[in-house]
Length: 443
Image (cartoon, rainbow, N blue to C red; front, top):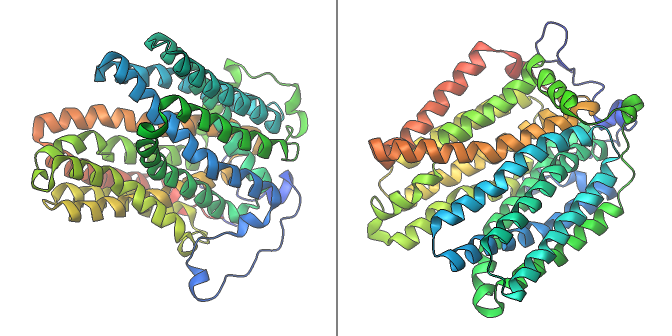
């Protein structure tokens, strides 16, 4: 296997996956299927019982979590009749999520990850019960809602790094892209189905029951995690404590390993420069008004998730690729080109097609960036890498909202979308040319 370019400190692909020092020899790889099986969803990781349990639980919780994600802003708006308060609530959730994701990554590298997942999933479930209790009681307190949201996102920040880092201990290195595609497909499907289901259920059963459904769904996750094998730290890491020094060590590790650094930069470039969602309302009201502003807005928001889901359903086309670096570069460039195409289009459905193509490219990028983080980092750093990954994924689109909203006001929405997409292509190609480590990375 090739290694990433470095001066001698770059992590090698050998010796870091679960099929080597982490978990013994991997199972013999299944031969590729024939006909449609070669390009349909790659389900090889589901042969592993532990991963299958973890993945199956996300099918329920991916939809359930979106019920709460819709219910909280809806309840805040019902109380305040102010979109500004909805925005403040989002910020109240972002700050603890960022802080606890960074700390949670360090914790995940020093404790049994299964136990950490049990504690944090239970905490998230109890928070959903508290959401239900305040809604049933008719408390109507925005302060209470924001405090509960902050608590929920803190638990999520602790949970996400441990969950993602655990995958490399459950799945052979060669199947990490397939495992990431399976997980991402479920989450993207939840992003589409969850809000639609919430919209149908709110008039029928009301907001409190949405919280309760989410809490019950999280019980499935707690049971699935309980059935996982123990995932204790390897070697001497159990003696360490998770503190500021360990968090700082994670950032030093990233800065010293070019492949990891570039995998984060690729996502930042794609999301900050190229995520156009803040401009969708203006595009719907101005550019695509003949189709109806409501329909146009829904179509625009659906485009990227639809493309991502399609990418997951046909992940067999790309999941066996070994040149992970080139896959990331090509996917980010494809994302930028597709976003630029959407900005240049004056036809709603052509723009939808471009956004769907962007979603497909984003799914491919997500799959291989995730695989690089799990395979290129040593197990004692995977939690911290996933903590930073959580922050980048959550923070990048929010920065993009500010950047694109400002650019849209200055230059018009179509020019801002097209310009952002073009910048993604230029910057990503420049990074790939300047630092060959990502181009050379393979597994």
